[in-house]
Image 1 (cartoon, one colour):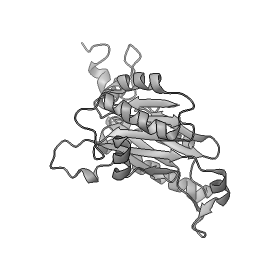
Image 2 (cartoon, one colour):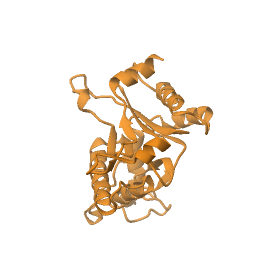
Image 3 (cartoon, rainbow, N blue to C red):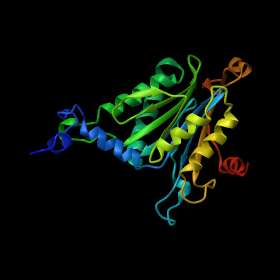
Length: 256
């Protein structure tokens, strides 16, 4: 006989086990917990997202590995879990952002795009054929004129929450404990970057270098920059508020 939390219930995305669980979602969360640690911290003047970037072999060209991705000029994402699933969700998120731009002439607010990503997570392409949920959790960092800088976490179930600071991946419990002790509402972006590096260092195996750490930051535009508004004249596209730090910048932060 199948057990209450496994057996036949492990193969369905639409049937609850007798204990009230969707077992496939739990399996997806287990895949996330085996991924490298990623974290995000909301500061008073921006957001930082950071992650470990490790290759499985020294023969792999790690310059081609990207764990922090730009969705549009005001939103960036980092993940823990399965890389191929992340790339699928990134492609969908970028299409959604461009579709929003085409209709409204501006890039989507962070919450709107996060809802689109969460909807993609909650609706696999073909549940009838037993397609599994995405084995990835995301931290979505963005800035918009309506809510300012915001940080969201999206899980394989499609649920999402706004966070001041959060961590995902194999060392997330220790990382969250560390962040709870160090975080305060008045933290600056510079301090948040240092705190992110210290948090990753707590569970890091080996030596932290600019090639094993990846960082992205959201910067809040000044009033003058908002008044300038747009660049490119004819295109009218806004100045980016999200960018990935270069290896040289990461090296400088590690040296401090």
